[in-house]
Image (cartoon, rainbow, N blue to C red; front, side):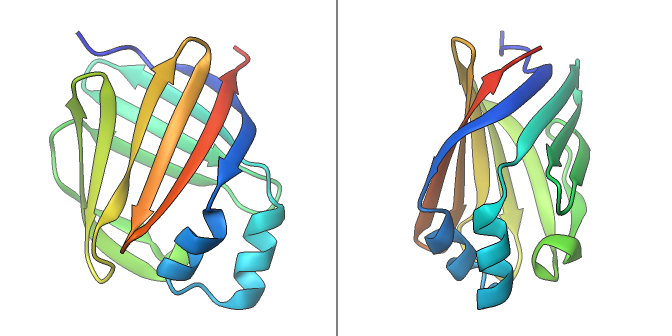
Length: 135
């Protein structure tokens, strides 16, 4: 049985975000702004339906989906693109594959104790972020 990820998670650390943003072809100004942000995560997990919110003072992004059901994700507010997205469980990890202009794009979430780990990929770049559950 996969873990229930419901909770509010506060940003702790990240590695290689700039490489990831560069792989998405974000312009230099936007990359500098994003690098200053400390985003939080709020996840609602009810059975096969999930809502993942990425929250910051600059911009919030809300992703609502049914596990295992492919949908068109509108990422224009993130990087100006749309892609076909599917989110599934692989063992204890929530895995997202985003098919579109950027190859090897997606992410993984998993829990280790009260820490939510996020691994973002685009092209050959990998960014790792860690969040601490606060409620």
